Amino acid sequence: MLTFVIKLLLPEIFVKRSILFVALFITCCSSYLYAQTSADYKFKTIVLDAGHGGHDTGCRGAYSYEKDVTLAIIKKLGELIKKAYPDIKVIYTRETDTFVELYERANIANRNHADLFISIHCNATKSLTAYGTETWLMGLHKSEGNLDVSRRENDVILLEENYEAHYDGFDPNSPEGYIILSMNQNAHINQSINLASKVENEFSKDNRQSRGVKQAGFLVLWRTTMPSILIETGFLTNRQEEKYLTSESGRNEIAQSVLKAIVEYKAEVEGDFSQLKLVRDEENGDNNLIADTSGKIYVKQAEHLDSVNKTIEKGSNDSISKTNAGTIFKVQITASENLISIKDPRFGGIQDITIDKNDKGINRYVIGNYSSFQDCQNRLAVLRKKGYKDAFIVAYKEGNRIPLNQLP
Image (cartoon, rainbow, N blue to C red):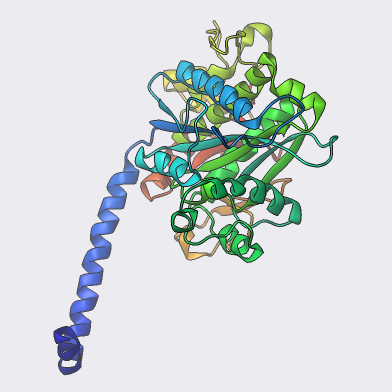
């Protein structure tokens, strides 16, 4: 009441003081954000989530349960990550056949300040011939099929006690509830799209049928505060895929594909492409990760790294452009399904920003046009200090975008 009276009696003083307070608050926040983003960003923690568990069996095939398949794959993936990155902390939402509520899975990731959250699942449908992989992120479903998948994965909350309180009254049987839920997009939607695309790309390299990157309202992704994806590794209702998903070789291959996507994504985000050698086997002339049947990997140290890794490790990045005449380097700062004007205020008046649309309809916003890798890396450092901490370098050859680790 006293504040209200003062506001009436001294409106001009009140407004001036309010503006001063807001200005000071923004200044403090800006200083804090600059301090946070100016430091080199490095992955510290990855949370791995095996879908379902305990009395929640998930979908089932002719002889297998989703909860068992997802746990086996997630354990193999965890082993691969620990072997490739000993300094990264790997946390599982479950390591045994136990029931964990969906909200608690997100809470585990948030409490541990995870850099990535990856949830592994298996698909199912009435059709016995459906097959292939899908990688999902939180967002608006665009088809009835997308809604069906999220509804099937979300129905598990009916097995939880007092689920209405944990999910803000969400009703898994209400179509309206899904519309509201799916309109909530994770703040890290662009990074999630980037990682999801890499996962599906790796599956395609293994001759798996990729059904693409999709969006829908998944409760397990709803409240995560980091890039988060849900991977449907295949259909247990397809006899051939069930055989693959329950085999040691199939699980190894799936885990390796996801690891390779993580390595590439991490290298881009951190701007450290020397780590790409973790998924290269140059002696055999391909990019396959080596794995034994136990799921424990070893990485063959090549005697001659590719030119990109050599120059990065020696600190002579400028010679990359000499080795790759005609290659153009740019910095990607974000990506979006929806078209954003390059004059949008969030781009801070950057003049040399352009839009590179990929074949999946994703608008990628890139900056610069450098023939020198070193010049591009200098620009990357400047952009990260301005707050674009997820920016990374991309390369183009004859107008076509190519992965940096494929440069000669």
